[in-house]
Image (cartoon, rainbow, N blue to C red; front, side, top):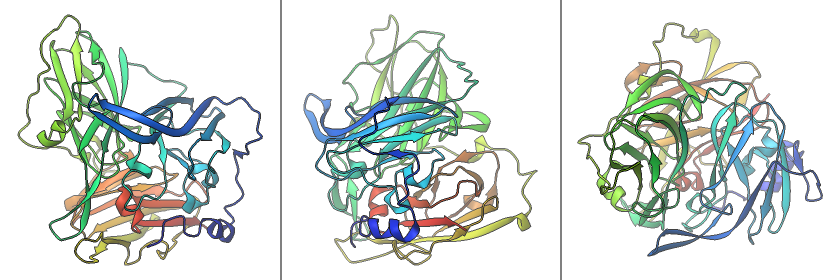
Length: 450
């Protein structure tokens, strides 16, 4: 299969997407609010683990704080020798600047500087990352260090916490290994929190009685992660940056690729603890960081969980105010793969077709839609819809819920999941599995507005 840049210019001309509202050329002189520089860098995961990659000046990239509804300018400088692109994940932006070539966003040429003008919305924890093709090169695209935090502050930001920390989970040094069915899947040697392996870098220092807010991002190219904080409980208040209908406690967090969780922790158990992957083999690969109370000098402690537990439904509400079926147009989406032979990666499909041959459903402004994902594969899939926020409506087993707003949802293997959204952002919108390898192998579809 050809790279996803196969027909970028033809695609832009055919869809009229070449008109770039909000994108300034390299001659623009306006002073930007933020600068994002794409360049080669070295991640020192530990003194013995130096990773040569491409990042945004640092890994993770600098935190971009924007104000909801206030116009902002972000300058992107590409110092690499490759075309690049930056996707502003979770924002409701025009297709021309969203950051997906399939929607018509122009690439940033090698050595070029461009400026993006945007009025960010909605408020909450978003992020930015590359959106290019990797194929079998597990150093490119999302396998690299090109990911960073973006937070859109609302006008009435409550700030009901004493300290705030942004954490990115990432996997490195990927290589393809054979799966049980003979196909090829990425495996990783190193896993990090904010680019550091457990035991290296500065601990997160806290004081007894503090309420600490954690914004956690899974920027892994392919892996789901389970995160726990030994001796403490998470109070989940937002998923993918959107406040949940029912804030709830959890002993661990599950994050699929591209998912974010915002949760506060009451620091009520003095000592030195590990915040890290619940599964031993991934924590052993480095995914963890140290939480250190003031005055504590003990070695970092970990309390192993006996099982994995996470349920979107606990953050929703009962389905009492469901939208009538006649007011919602359902779009069935069958997710499956086609085995291509031992030692090969599968061909991934939506409704029996791989991108760029997938259908292009037409949306009508103001109409409510239900995406019904029918996962007929043996893999879980983090499905992401660009430029929109959807509501979880049905979970595996036919369980109904409301009030959980997201932009990425993990659809379990062999199960159905339904989400709903109102078409409110005209233009082209990309839907895809957020696993880099699946996306590269055709697991994408583009929606367009009438």
